[in-house]
Image 1 (cartoon, rainbow, N blue to C red):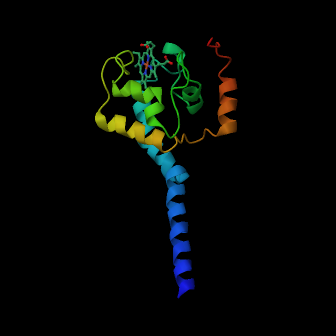
Image 2 (cartoon, rainbow, N blue to C red; image 1 turned 180 degrees about the vertical axis):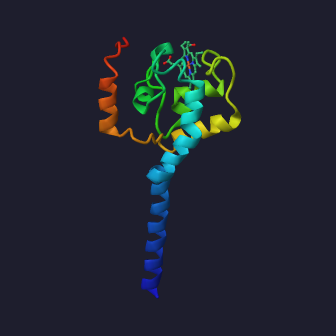
Image 3 (cartoon, rainbow, N blue to C red; image 1 turned 30 degrees about the vertical axis):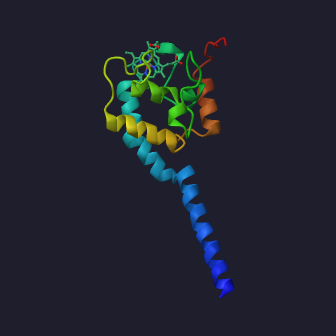
Length: 148
Ligand code: HEC
């Protein structure tokens, strides 16, 4: 009897851990799909024209995870896991009078929620893991340093 209860408790803890882990590190395939469907198109349509390969307004590129982590004039714009601390989320929410992005028109609520959820998931960006994104950054050429 006692033993069964212990095993039961153990299983409960294990399954709780599995759920907690899944929330932290989402299944890579599902995460990739989410990104391609809900995140990349929104950024590409609304942000890359000013924060992409051609222009880097505010010294910021949003077309790679590394670019977001490196950030712009004010430092990193992405804090994986923390939408409320991520400057680009603040910008699209239009809550900061000084920084509203995209400048012309606010994104839809669904788009904003999708971006925030992506950050919450840890901002998985398929094909940009440690090594590959540092390489890509080098290939992109040196960036001017920001004095702090
Ligand atoms: C029409 C051009 C334009 C578009 C489109 C645009 N931005 Fe910007 N962005 C700017 C300019 C200009 C600045 C810098 C000056 C300022 O603060 O307004 C800036 C600055 C920023 C900053 C602050 C960077 C820093 O460190 O100071 C963030 C974050 C940002 N943009 C996010 C976004 C996001 C996210 C999108 C798309 C949803 C977007 N922007 C679309 C022009 C644009």
